Image 1 (cartoon, rainbow, N blue to C red):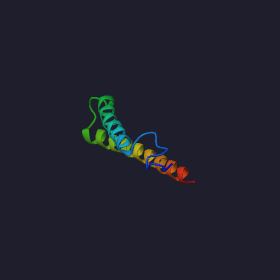
Image 2: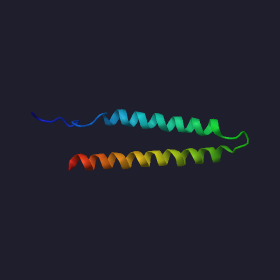
Image 3: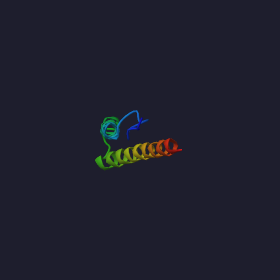
Image 4: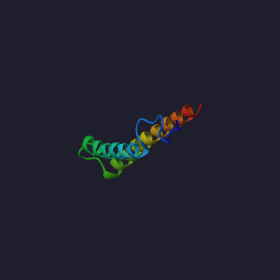
Length: 72
């Protein structure tokens, strides 16, 4: 039985990308909602970018790790 290219994946890459984009948007909203009233928008944006970057970095690490483990 030939294996399909998606064999072993529990979500497709497209769904994963959509989920990550949704998480990124939610992080931006969370930062803006949690910011104090006198916070500068640049500070909010900087914090949001750092949080989003960390989230994408962690997701990329686990994606790479899972691909490496699947190949072994």
